[in-house]
Amino acid sequence: MAIGMIRAIKLTPSLLLRFFRRKEVRVPCIYCPGICIASCPTFLESGNMMLSPLGYSRHPEIGRRECLKCWRCVSECPLNYELPETFSDGIEVGLELVREGTPMLLSVEGLDEGYASRLAEELEAGFCIAKGLLRRYDDGCRIENLSEIRRRLKGIKVLSLSPEASHSLGIPFLLEAAHELPLKLEYEGPVHIPCLLSDRSESIVHNLELIGAKINGVIKDSCLKQSIPDALILCPRAPKNIYDLLEIRTL
Image (tube, rainbow, N blue to C red):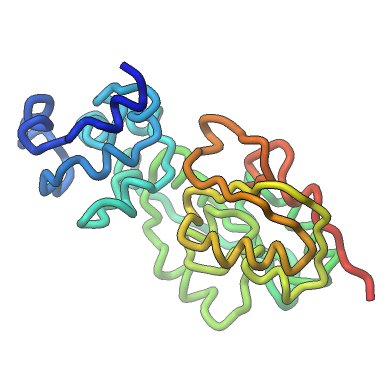
């Protein structure tokens, strides 16, 4: 069945219950008209109900392996149920201070330490590393000490290089504050906005333009874990991304 046809299906409670019995769904589902399913990239690509939020809720082991942890289903869910956090055991995140300074650039262990270290040195900024946080978006884990980490960062001007840290810790994404830093970017073309930052797209695009970029399109409906579009990539997961293009503006 074509993806276009899948999008046209009206996912009614009765249709969902033909596939799932109420007692088998492990989330507080209110059986809305399949809003989460209609937003799920793995379901839209495959048409397979097992590769949907309801399938993942019934089989967490499949969710851990197949779910992209893009959080689209969470933002669409009337209950804002954080399904991607339920696939694995809870974890604790650690913070390692590498360098004092303001602003403080926060990187995620195993994702963007190299970019953060270089930028912190060039900007004479602080630098710290969040250890273990990536598992929330790779394996689907709840951060048990999230409130404690947020308290430790409160009152500090912290900027995240990754969508993951910004999404988890509620701190500004670096490119939302790009105009406050001596950064410049020579680029003309479309930009890809990560799923985790889709609600901040206007601010990000505005800041990119303030540091010299000419943005002529915004891509929001694709996930980098499925395919990498021909656009400016803001996520350090991609082999080539914005941090390879950013330059320091000299006065």
